[in-house]
Length: 479
Ligand code: BG6
Image (cartoon, rainbow, N blue to C red):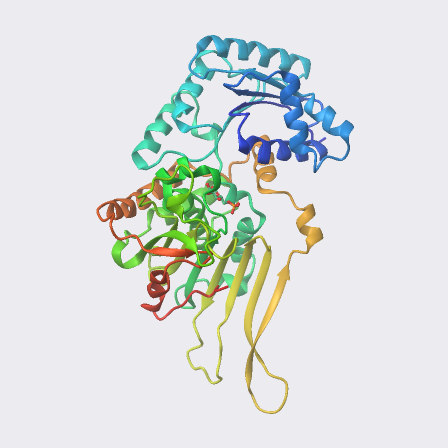
């Protein structure tokens, strides 16, 4: 049977992420039979909640997706709540007793998944206590899921990693980058390595540029406190964008195993060329919208009135290997842009001879909200003569397919149950990404006066267009 045994202990169970993503994802694993009788969840946080109250929160979180009320009820009956002070050894003692009794009750056989979904400041304390207070079992697996942000720069992330490594080995750690759980991000390797057509021309002889866009229409919403210290570079580039870049440019692994995939991703991330920041990177901050309906970033809650934090980044990334040096990889991400879209556009060079008046050949990987692939090619226009016209071959996932396909968190949580680390960020990748991002951050910190503003609901500052124009390129996606 596909049923797995696991006891989850969630640190940060009262948080927004838990209700929005974790409980629904666990429910989906439950309704598909991966979790059934032999699982339990202990939610912890500082707040005083009763089991009943917690179970109601869980029920509400899965309300819109549950098969029936009875089902949601049965699912939530596996949840317990413990008010917990992460620094208090006594509390871990209580937690251990509760964990052991649930383990017996549901015959879980020692499998434990510790989910750290709170400030990284506490990760060291928590993991140490888990080990010292013997919440780590001898008879089953012990895995730790870690939510972002994994530090705020290389140094802090290394410190964090060392602390965690005192109690858990790298192969027990599952650092979540939810983009790696998205179907269309996983599709990148499938497209690249199972199509000779694409594989053979995925190089600097053939490609003109690669463009990664992760644009958001929302502003910082209620996360101003976190975001104003972070900014777009740390929030989106260090993790999601660089992970996507590594998948787009890594060499073909010897075989599709965690170890081989990680090896190739790491090689790329270590080869990122330190950019000329002033030339190659653009930051921006949103100001109010033209119609005045949307506030400027500086007027958002918990954001300082003279904030220099970037809510937008565009840049030219270079992978400094013979294979990639000559292919610019343009990236951009921002809050309060025109549309919420995640996509990759790959532009081929024109043919050497150009005997026809050819247009662009472009592969677009739509990550979200649309999902699918689109290939723009040159076709002959019907009729006399040899007039060329663009044609678009599309394989977009239908509404029904999107409804049925697993969501990123569901896929990633199933991977954790299976002990598959392929779609999680390895320490080496995280370290290399931080070093690259720190380099840009340091350059920007030396010049805090010159942050360009962009109108809310636009595609970013004009400087981002200039960046490509210098190379005779332009953003292929331009809503
Ligand atoms: C998170 C960032 O990692 O990703 C958020 O912290 C951002 O600021 C989010 O909104 C975007 O994810 P998605 O899946 O909605 O594109």
